Length: 191
Image 1 (spheres, rainbow, N blue to C red):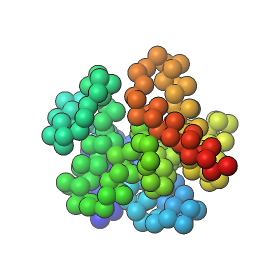
Image 2 (image 1 turned 45 degrees about the vertical axis):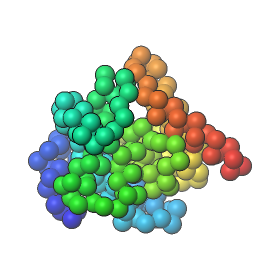
Image 3 (image 1 turned 180 degrees about the vertical axis):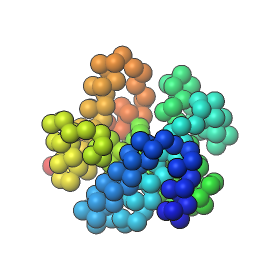
Image 4 (image 1 turned 60 degrees about the vertical axis):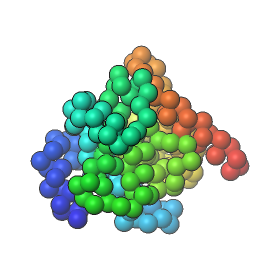
C-alpha cells in the first residue's frame, strides 16, 4: 500500500511536500517506537496526513459538507484548515483505510482535538516538528520534549503555533485553543 500512496502523492502534491510527508512518516514511526505504540499505524497516518493538502478550497468545503462536518466561520473563511479532515476522507475512500485510530490521527494532525489518542498526538507533533521544519532552538526544544512528555509537547507546540498566528494577525481556529487547553490540563495532571 505504501507504494500506491507514494505514487498517488507524486501525481497530486509537489516534490517539496512529498519530502515533508516522508519526514512526518519517519518521525511518527520513531515516536511510536519510543512510546511503544504501533509504529506501522503511525507511519501509515504520517504518510497519508497531507493527501488533501493541495485540494482547491471549494473541494475541501464540498467534501467536508458532504461528510456532515460541522463547519465554523474560521473553516469557511480559511478552507485550507480542512485539509486534515479531508485527508482522512481520502485515506478511507481512495486507499480503503478503515482503522479509526489512523483516520483520526490524519484528521487531527493540524488542529488537534481534545482527548485525542497518543497516536494522534504523535502525528500532530511529527507534522510540526519533522526535521524539514527547521532547526531553531525552539523547535529543537520541542523535539526533545516530544520524546519526554507527549501532552506537554502538544501543549507547547500549540503555544508555538499560536504565537506565529498572532504575530501574523491570522485567524485562530477554536480547535487549536481547545487542543492547547486539553494538553495543558493533561500535562498538569500528570505531574
